[in-house]
Amino acid sequence: MKGNYDKAFENVVRLRVMSILMVNEQFDFNSFKEILEVTDGNLASHLRYLENQGYVAVEKTFVGRKPQTNYSATASGKKAFQDHLDFLENLIKENKSH
Amino acid sequence: MKNPEQELAEIKSMMERSTRFLSLSGLSGVLAGIYALIGGGIAWYWLYFPTSQWGDSSQILNSSTLLPRLLLLASSILLFAVGTAWLLSKRKSKQKAQVFWNGASKRFMQALFIPVLVGGLFTFALIHEAAFQLIPANLLIFYGLGLVAASNFTLGEIQKLGFFQLILGIMAAFFPDYGLWFWVSGFGILHVVYGALMYQKYDR
Image (cartoon, rainbow over all chains, first blue to last red; front, side, top):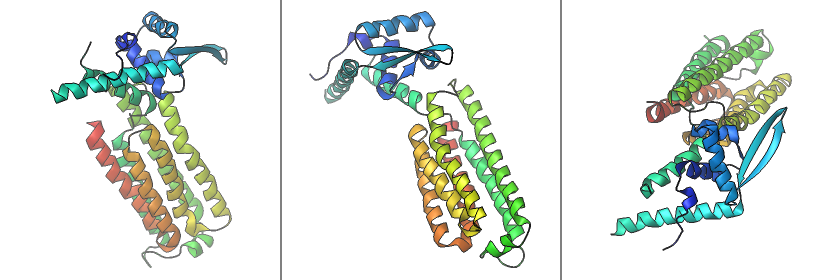
């Protein structure tokens, strides 16, 4: 079977984070917090998980005097997510043909 | 694991919500169209009533005090339309519990307003050069370009609305005597039609 079910995306917050990073070059911490409606701690731990997997890259900058943490998907993160998508799509196809 | 259909739907919705400004209110399109119809009626009354229904308005505009009045009228329509769109879209995003001012809405505004602002400046150049007959075509074309550019960051219908504005704009350029009628068709009738379609599809 094509694709690969990735445990990293089993969690819905991480799945959503990665979906957003597939279509946005960069996304910052506060924007994630607003759109996902999760707490700081929860979001930070999931982002760290993805960072440790090598799926997202972190970049800290300053906007005026405020610190901003930007996230982007790495090449291996994009590939892992694409494999995960392929897996889901194949699963749906198989279910239909039975 | 959840079922895969659900998971894919989740992914798709996140991609859309993070890149597209989905709170654009259809009702505000209808209202913008109505403002334009009223404004077009007033302009027609000032320009042509009661002698003819259309014609070259350059002579009339050159030789009277109508120009400042028309500019004021056009600016008020624009102000009312943008204000209504802003307020109603803000209300819609609140109802849907979405963030109004985010990366997606910023990109939408930028894509729409760069062509529109340039078009506005170009209009002043046309007035300066007394090329009044090209103003309706110019407004429709730059607005259409803005809509097509912005359609990547909002509801898909906006792209078709943009193409129709562009077609009307080009026709208005070739038939400048009917400029006001093309302007009313584009900014009035098309807005009402598309606003109603979008209201039907997304707002309720």
